[in-house]
Every structure is written in C-alpha cells, then in structure tokens.
Amino acid sequence: MLDHAPRPTRRLFRGHVANNHRPRTLRHAHIVGWGMEVPSQVLSNHDLAAIVDTNDEWIVTRTGICERRIAEPGETTTSLAVRAAQKALDVADILPSELDLIVVATSTPEHSFPSTASLIQDLLGAGNAGAYDLSAACTGFVYALDMAASKIQTGSINTALVIGAETMSRVMDWSDRGTCILFGDGAGAVVLQGSDTPGGVLNTVLRSDGSGWDMLTLPTISSRDTYLRDGEHQMHRIYMDGKGVYRFATRVIGDSIKQAMTEIDLTPDRINLVIPHQANQRIMDFAAKSLKIPEERIYSNIERYGNTSAASIPIALAEAANSDRIRPGDILALVGFGGGLSWGATIIEWTAVPTKPSRSITWGRRKGEYAIAGLRRPVIRWWRRLMLLSPTTWIIGARRYLVHRRDQLRAQLPAVNVSVPAIVKDRDSKDRDSKDRDSKDTDTNRKDKPNE
Ligand code: UT7
Image (tube, rainbow, N blue to C red):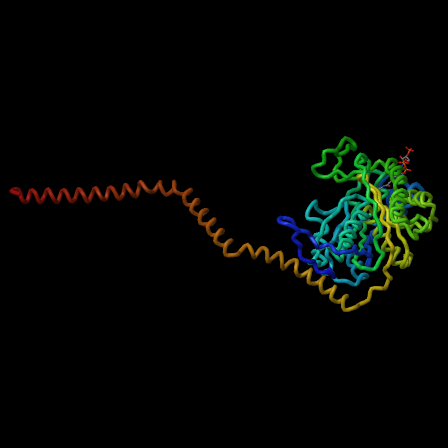
C-alpha cells in the first residue's frame, strides 16, 4: 500500500495542471521475498542420448549441464509460476491483496493474450494488482525487475511481484541436438517492496540489438520469418545460432555488469555474487575472467536445471538466498542476455534478512485469500453467465425469439396458402349455393306473385 497519499493537483495557469503525485524523494525497491519451482520430472543427458545423436560427455564439457527438468503434461508456465510466487509471498510474509503489480517475464506463455500475469493474478487472488507479461527472452527477468523497481522508486506503487517462468520443453525441436540439450522448465519469483531505507535495486543497464534477431528466434503465429528444417517451415520451435550467440554472450556479460557498476561508482571487485543467466558454464567462467573475480563469486546451478530462459536468474537467486550464499549488505550483480538480441545487468544491495517462513496470522490469511480466489473464479464465471439473464437481456432475447418465430411462421405460409383456395373455394361454393337458393326462392316468390 502507498504510505503517502496522493496530493491534489495544482493549477498552474488556465488549462495547465501540474501532477503532484510523485513523492518528493525517490524511494528504494528492496527484494523482500523469493521463491522457485521446477517440475519433478528429470531429463538426464543419458535420457537425451536416446533421443538425439549426443552423449553425456559432450554436453557436460561443452555446457556444464547434467540434467534439466521437464514439465509434466498438466504443468504449465502459469502453474509453475504460481507455486514460485506463493513461496515468494511466504518469505515476504505479505498477502496477495497487498500486491500492486505483477510482471511476468516469459517466452512461453499459454496465450498471446490474456497475459500469464493476469492468470497468475487471478489464481493468487491479487485483487488490487495490475498485471502484464514482458517479452525479452532470456533477459526478461532483468527487464521485468527494472520495470517494477522503477515504479516503486517513483512512488507510483509499493509492492510488486516479479516472475520469470518458462516451459521451454514445449517449444523445443527435439530433433535439433544443438538446442534441445540446453533448455529446461521452471519458474522463479521475487517480491519487491518500497522503503525509505537505502539499498535494494541500485542500478540497471538495459540494451538491445535487433539486428541479431535471427540468431535466436521462436517464430509464432503471423511470423513472416519462419525457418526451414527438412523442407518444412518451423513454427513454435526454437532456432539458435549457438556459436553466434555464444560470441555475443561472452562480449556483453562482463561489459554490462561493469557499466552498471561504474554508473554508481562501484568497481567489480565490490561484487559479492554474480547471478548470471544460466546459458552455458563456459560463458559464466568467462564472466569471472572478464570481471577479474574468483569463479566462486559466480552462482551456477546449470548442472541441475540447464537453461530455463527468463526463469534462470530468479531460480538461481532464490536458491542462493535459501542456501545462505547471500547475506545482508552483499552487492549482487544480476545479468541476462539472449534473444533480441537483448541484454541487461542489475546491481542490488541485499537487505533482506532471510527468515524461515512461519505459520503466522498473515500465513493463515494468505491461505484464506488463495481459497477465496479458488472459489471466486467459478462463482464470478457463473455470475457473468447469469448476468446474461438481466432484464435488458431478457427483453432483447424475447424480441429476438418473437422475430424468429414470426419469420418461421412466414416461412410456413406457402403451406397455409395451399389450403386457402380450398377453404375459399368451399366458402365461395357455399356462398354461391346459398345465393342460388336465395334467387330460386325469389323467383318462386315472383312466380307466386305474378302481379307484383
Ligand atoms: O539462453 C540464450 C543464450 N544462449 C546461449 O548463450 C547459448 C550459446 N551457445 C552455446 O552455448 C554453444 O554454442 C552450444 C552449447 C550451443 C554449442 O557448443 P559449441 O561448442 O559452440 O559447439 P558447436 O556448435 O561449434 O559444435 C561443435 C561440434 C559440431 O560437430 P563438427 O561440425 O565439429 O563435427 C557439432 O555438430 O559438436 C557437434 N555437436 C554436438 N555433438 C554432440 C553439436 N551439438 C552436439 C551435441 N552432441 N548435442
């Protein structure tokens, strides 16, 4: 909730109004909650060797990946994201109704619209939150974090949920050994909250170079530029120029962190932990060299989850926070790179004191809000249907029915007309008979009265 009430607008001169909603000083956006969720189904390198022409040794030495998680048929980007978000809310110990904004970075949404964020907002029961998806491929989480942090820093919101979630297995070309060995599924989430205490998100650098759009691409509906494989246009399948992206990644990973640090007068040696996008262990090792910091200061979990695209940074962040790799006062560098081409780095001063989620009153209220959200959904949907039976709808419906019946009757008229001549004929003949009878009677009368 905003702790400063918006002040009334001030009229400068006729027709011009100054918007005084901005607070006098910038606030600070702190990470106060984190959570991650991965599917339980494991796909090892040995399993992959049965699908494509590859082997465990090649994958481990070239990428550092041993296994990845693959969503079960019933699992979706949304379901993974909701579980990660609930864990983040538990750590932050806040209610879904306290969220002002939900931003979801994903390249594998279930729909072009509605956004995954809207589905998550409904499932959490975050009734006061705006929600949107953000598309920046593997850099998505860094972009999303910056969007939410900026809104908190300017005072327009106070609490935001930022999620990176993917089901990459659904867009894999399982015959392409250059990509299918890399990617996995999962979701990570953080809760950001505004405070006057310095710290939290300190600085972010975001960049893009669209000239390299075709180096890493996932063509979807209405795409003009599908790519050909075995003579067939590929849609909803990832294509990657692995070597090209590798060269790009090693160039930007260190540079973007250095730039983000320099802009706030810090040097890379001040970094306690780099949390990079988990694309390839060799790229992460290169970052350590480029920043001239020990490899232990680069967090890696690629061995277990592979590349989960926009989810990889928040998953790594949640793991690092849960395993006490991060302590209050630490300087973290989050760095992402990928399709777009896009890249970005965020510098964070960690302020959260990790505590185990407790079964507090807020915990109970949170569970209550989830339960209400679960009930609200079918009730609202039925209510919308019932609303179709409003008086206006009744009148419109009745009118439509009557018009329809009239048209039906009109359509039957030819059949009625067939019988009309018979009736008319019958009636006419009766009329004629009676007239004949009348005239005969008259004639008879005339005959009876010849002198008249
Ligand atoms: O998340 C978005 C960002 N993505 C990235 O950052 C990914 C960046 N790229 C990479 O990580 C690496 O380029 C890959 C892991 C994708 C590929 O590694 P590489 O060392 O660049 O291998 P390569 O493509 O140059 O292939 C080397 C050899 C080739 O054989 P020849 O032509 O030398 O005989 C490939 O055909 O390895 C072969 N190869 C494989 N062999 C066994 C390629 N993939 C495989 C495989 N198993 N899965």
